[in-house]
Image 1 (tube, rainbow, N blue to C red):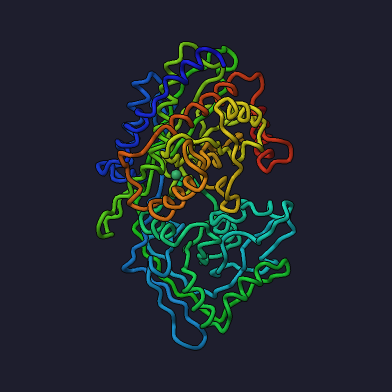
Image 2 (tube, helix red, strand yellow; image 1 turned 45 degrees about the horizontal axis):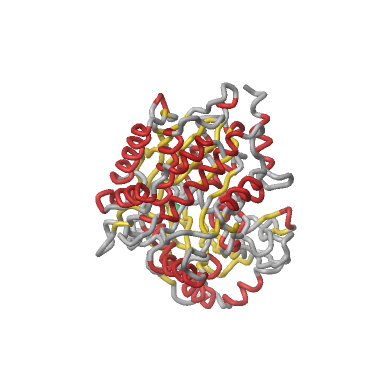
Length: 533
Ligand SMILES: [Zn+2]
């Protein structure tokens, strides 16, 4: 490693990361909601830090900001109604938040649905796995009842075995249903299948939800979830058995089933137009030719904001998620900007908005990168880096799919860290953080995180800490700053990120996807767009 890189790395400070986390997760920033005052203040503050470190602006019109237009849609729980009306028997009236949640993706103030309900199993059409839940059944104008996740399998060639593919994500389910002209989707929430409890769904859907303004893909009038118990009752009212329905979905020969149930739904939403901002800065590369190319660092600064209708503490401070990633990003910014000699390629740093709304800020960044996507060698993302002390394992899931992997391996070794394979590939973390938005436009991208083994503790200790976080703080108002947090972890991850990025920034060739990877196609497409210019 060049002396300048070593020096830059040594300047990274755990206490500076602490100060960032403390500031960004303070109640005064109101949980940094997208389009809320606290979110805007966070963006201004991050830009001010970039400037103070000497970063150049990489946003619109010579600013540090990329303006992102949104519709903000809040479902009105008082006026919104959903009932399942069986052919015979009493209608089931559901209670918003307790029984179900729903968003109007068409951002209309009022949408009415009176439509048949069709159970479509997993709602997946995956030709490469010879899997089609729709079986050419016309679902236009219908509401689709479906499961999250994908058919279970240990066969690595079938939906990547235990690992979740994009087909298992709820975002895919909504996208596919809308492409087929369905008006609504009701996802059945089962904690083990979703890999997070109902509270996470409830809290994510309970507040305002944001949609990218320049998104022209087809959309659902009602994109929702129901509790497992509600689904059970619903099945019963239709004379069916939910457990059998769940089983049926695991078969390749599954066919959609129309239930003897009508969905009557009135979705009333408060709709506003607003903009939020990605904060982008850069440190120019030292090589006259390669400086037109870049490595990129990303971390989302938004969280779930404030939910004024909830009693008690209703500020979702987002200390771990993701003030920690911002603390790392800012230390990287400071370290690169302060380096006596710069890496060959330019270093781009982006604090993105609206991750919690479905990776929207990074999606916009991917569609409007300050340097063309084909010239971005690598994106390293930081999201949710637990301040638990000194980690001895590095998680870099997805890195093995890229040509950057040998660098990740050698850096991990230099830091005395073992590379920890994804503990929960079934949770599909790869598709749940901002690097995925860059991968979609072809940029080799992954997040850096820590495994559960920490210095001075056994594995069980770290696993218990992680479980405790997921159960008691993740996406809850209790994700707050605590003075006993130990940011050694975050500083170490920042250093690892700097070392990997510096090396990749100096390589003669841009990084790429390994042959046959699902994102290789996107990379090739972005390379070809060069000739169009
Ligand atoms: Zn996050």
